[in-house]
Amino acid sequence: MHKAKVIFIGEQAVEQQEPIILFFGEGVTDGLREYSVIQKMEDSASVELAVGDFILFGDQKYTITHLGEFANKNLQSIEHASFIFSEEEPHDKLTSSVYLVPNKIPKISLGMEITYQG
Image (cartoon, rainbow, N blue to C red):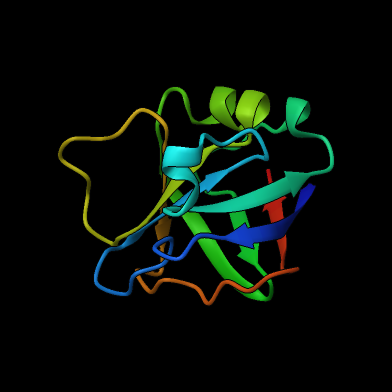
């Protein structure tokens, strides 16, 4: 299990019409900052997620249904993942994405704890 804390939420990071939230570590570029949720992870180098694992956004629990081939590597190196909330089987699977159900976007707040149960 790995923990992270939300330290910044960009003005355009969470949009209810788009079922995707971009998470990055503190090294996010200025161009992506306003579209991202910035997290600070305790030990990102050892994160290893798999299909069937859980991610908790505060107390909101989600199940991983698909994991892009670079998702773990990106989480480990730059604390980045594109979280996609969809019950549909993805056609064009994004390589850095983590697909989650249920398909409802979680409420994200500053200081919120993210728990990666992998």
